[in-house]
Image 1 (cartoon, rainbow, N blue to C red):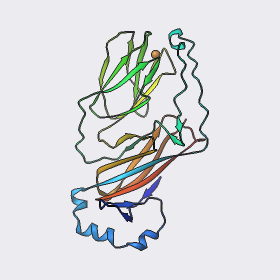
Image 2 (spheres, rainbow, N blue to C red):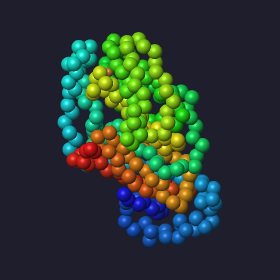
Image 3 (spheres, protein in one colour):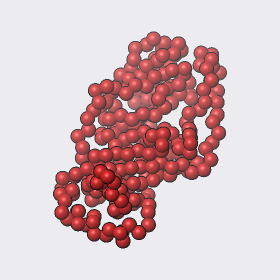
Image 4 (cartoon, protein in one colour):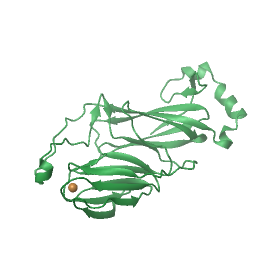
Length: 262
Ligand SMILES: [Cu+2]
């Protein structure tokens, strides 16, 4: 675990101060008094005026070669060829990583009125990984002409949540999401898997194609936030980061190719 302290590095046109997590001490010499003066003068601590966090997800080592899935067990599924999507690396960036704040966050989370949608298409769940807000609904649909069963687990211990057969043309399944990680499986087709990261705040985001996630409007506070990056094969990387009002703290979380989770 790394502890990231904000230090003044550069001022952007918007007046935001970029904060470095991994840099040396040069910047401290450049402007040692600024953070202290701001903290003393500003109501940042009391009011939780917003700051930001930029998380970069790095991947070290060689990505494993993509493997085709063996789907011969079901002739319907076997008609289409699919690759194992559990590890996807594009341009050196690991895909399907969720970054979230795991500490309590003082925000009124808006629960989107629209559900998140997970589809079963050509005997795959789509999308592989998604995010949602606690209380939001999930809808699961079967677009295939074969039987699936949606077997859902949730939490660190993968407790059984529900298990519903979904034959072709069966109605869409709708469920309310609670905080935590959900995994959808299919007992008929063991390669089928989907994950939903559910949090009671909006700082729970699928990493972008550029390997980064940036959150604005994170309430500032003197105690560090715990953040984690999660990947279905490589597990978790964690860090702590202090958010100061009007500044963007930066942190890098690194997954290693030879460190697959158990
Ligand atoms: Cu299935």
